[in-house]
Length: 217
Length: 299
Image 1 (cartoon, each protein chain N blue to C red):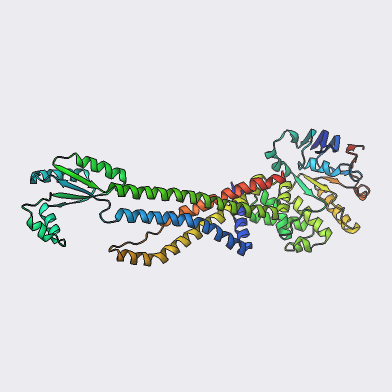
Image 2: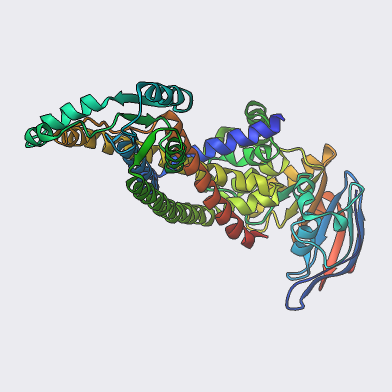
């Protein structure tokens, strides 16, 4: 499903955020990328999501070598992933439903079908009643659930998240963990970068531990 | 195909929403674009009317053919035949007797004409060709001058050439003006779109990360630029038509004072459409330049 070989990312200025990383993630797995702050978790998530391009090495997703693909192919590859960020990256000039509609608009879904799917996604994360609410009026946990609804609405094969519970209290964080686990149970591959150890205790996922950009476990 | 239509419909709807969302800004932008397009458009209409005025001015675009004094009726008939064949337009014969009568009727000429031993005036033809281009008139003048028993052919070619040169100069100035104001329109759209890209940077960043293509991101801005330009073009057309309506009365009165009649010609539906299309194109161009530069920071 996802296979990285000798993946390295060097930023301008010489900082090597990810060094010679190799791993394999199979379809339907739940994988946790852990490590201390600055270990390279976010960079690795961005590399998998094709937001960043590796300096060297190869990354194969669903049989496609992403390193060999041109810039114009990247948007279509990104649609295989559902992305959830620590800061959610919600759009505050539109309501919850319109936020969830964005990936479907990008995919060119007819409006009626898009609305049906967006409402279903909001329902899955327990926000159907807040469809008209502006994200700014939602709590931190609700905002994160809205971000998850946006990430899954396009039925991605991989759900990728970067510190999705980082800004949440324990209760909201646990609710978010449960939503990710639910998606994993129905076959969605879940890759989460986090330093929240409760994930490991509750779900026993595969763990990819990073230290100074290298895989140590 | 459905996705393609869906994307374009959404982009167009988004462009309309953006125009509607800030009515005052939209109104001011349309006014600026409208005025920028009004000046060259009005210049074009004014030149068009001036050309008509010049071409229709009595006596200006005529060729007068004077027969030689010894020309017989048969010679006159021959010239009539030739004119029938070559001259598209109007022509009329002025017999020498009629010319003499007109001269006698002129103030102070009656006694002079009476003292003449015989009619010194020749038979003549006054030709008003359909094609009044200076070159065409000159070719016709030369051809007529070569016909038998034609003593002299008179064409006020210097006036026609001067008038035509003036129109050419006016047209050139108009093109320069149009270029200048067109660049202004592009600049206005460029800046509006640049500000929009800045205001929507969060949306653009998110959209790119979740799989939006460059075309998806650019399309609403292109539609916005083209729409704003097209509406500016329509505003310019309305301003030109309004100005012509206001000028029609005074121009008509002035023409009557000069013993003629003249009514201003307004731009037709095709010209209004052309102005709208030009506005839309310039707006799209401004948007294209702005989006290309502004989106670089997201790469």
